[in-house]
Image 1 (cartoon, rainbow, N blue to C red):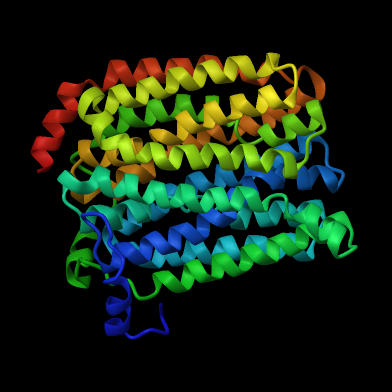
Image 2: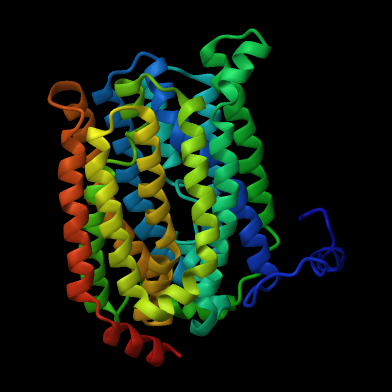
Length: 421
């Protein structure tokens, strides 16, 4: 986009019909996030298995996954607080650059400490979704409360489409290995190079974005970094996210490793299951507005948690990877379905000027607690039981649903939406 003049870009995109609420900058955000999601789509499938191919134990792999989550907590609150005061664009760019550097290190080094460094660097670029603090702040600045959930769901739709492509790409190393007659590790290196290309493109797409707030306005807000109006709501939301983060953190990061250890399945088998879940969730986003109008934001989130809980508890007793894969599709589809609802939810219940701070603080609390989960799960995989993390994680997911219901009723959300409007 940086190569096209603005009038050429507008002429090109005018032929594409975008949903309501999308201006030029949000279209660029959409394209950038889609590029990031392609990369995340294959990384979430191949990364743990790749580390296993390098000879690392489940406990070592768990620690490698703990690093970006722990440091991501610092990134989340830092980027969130600063984005509300100094603008979002620079922090989106920084995140994209760090994500690219992580892949470069994967390519050139196989040493454990270098992989740990890559994970640490990637912590400041992990994610790439509209729920990230700086992205949420940009969306909040450029949308009204009436269309915000719709914008989040549209971004979730395109992200899911991109992640579906990325999940299908998880099987490319097997193809590279056979067709190019190269080793397993080298075949993963080629996949990571593809990721570098997509991640770099994501960075260039962000550069033309224009901040809505003036530098003078952001400078005035810089006098106080912490939010002042929404601490009560942020505190409750952060507690709920901590419980959910710990529960899902014991399951999601090492799920591919679990299948690899239990059923000897590689990314070429798991990738399609992840892709199917993304593909189904992509179309489910088309019905979010309708479902939220019936059940409300809280009801939709609670429903998704309870259905996810069923999938989590059934996974350990799956007799083969076909049944397990079907449960992955159920678990992930329902979980992904309400992601844009949750992302929009926090922007509706806090003061608009503190949205990035709210997202950053709640993300930090969640990630700080969740950071220990992969290490705990890896230790359980190695020394206790492959199934135990699912039962413990499932209990926490159930508690997460209960706390959403207790803390946030429809009346509170509706009144907040009215006040923000």
